[in-house]
Length: 139
Image 1 (tube, rainbow, N blue to C red):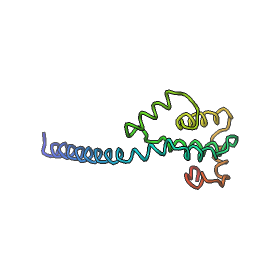
Image 2 (tube, rainbow, N blue to C red):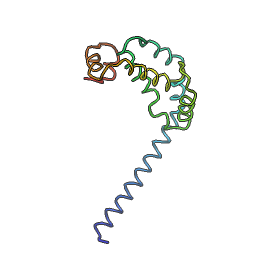
Image 3 (cartoon, rainbow, N blue to C red):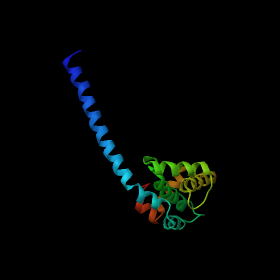
Image 4 (tube, one colour):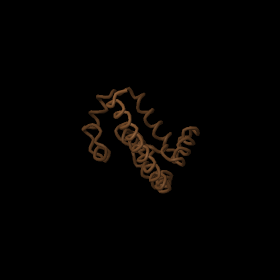
């Protein structure tokens, strides 16, 4: 084996070691914040805020799906979050406290409307509500 190949292999292991160290630190930080994170994912104020989206309007429905999707993003990163997310998916109940099913059912109910992506994109371009400001999906 040449010196160059050995150096590259050894450098790779050094980088992997640094990456593992960084990941362990990030995981500890995530676990340290999980209590607050989990409290908000189950808080009545969050559920009430999500209820403000219009159930009958397509653009509002897409904004709802976006926001509720953000609520479940990376929940599996800590044990408590993974357990709650698993319970939500397994229950299949669509209720205010089940953010996974609320997001899924809302997105699924948009598809049968037969609107293609171009119509949805046009709708977002003309929408002046809060979702366009916070997520800027189609700008």
